Length: 165
Image 1 (cartoon, rainbow, N blue to C red):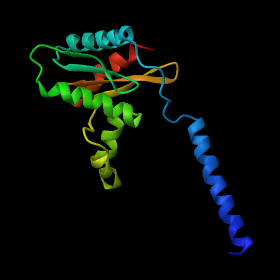
Image 2 (spheres, rainbow, N blue to C red):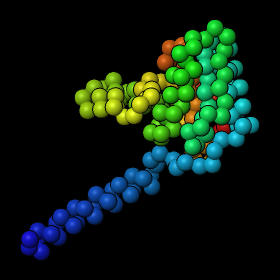
Image 3 (cartoon, rainbow, N blue to C red):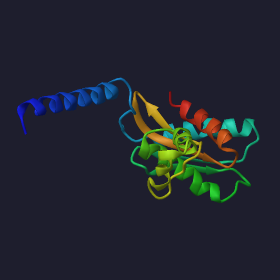
């Protein structure tokens, strides 16, 4: 290989690396932080529960820490049993992929290469209702809600996640 062909390849690689670094510096998903405390999880759950009760929606609310461990789970009376696992899967999906499950749902709904999300990992929940819980720019946990429509689950999850801000 001649030097003249190596130089453009090296310059191209350097440009790609600098763009990737710039994109990460300008936003990107936040880093994982210390785990959410029991007190914080209680505030998240209480805010989500208040939103659900205000709208007369029966749901399950699951809060996990930044390591993916369950911290708090509440199931409102008469909520379907399957929502226990779904809510926790939504929280876990959001945490592991560092984004809301709504974003993942939108990628899947677009079809094409977005369909690869179906094989991401077992227990993936690719519909709205899972959100990161972020404090001081770091992920301290995630909330998952299940029991009503995905949009309503998302509304409840947002109320919970916003309680930490």
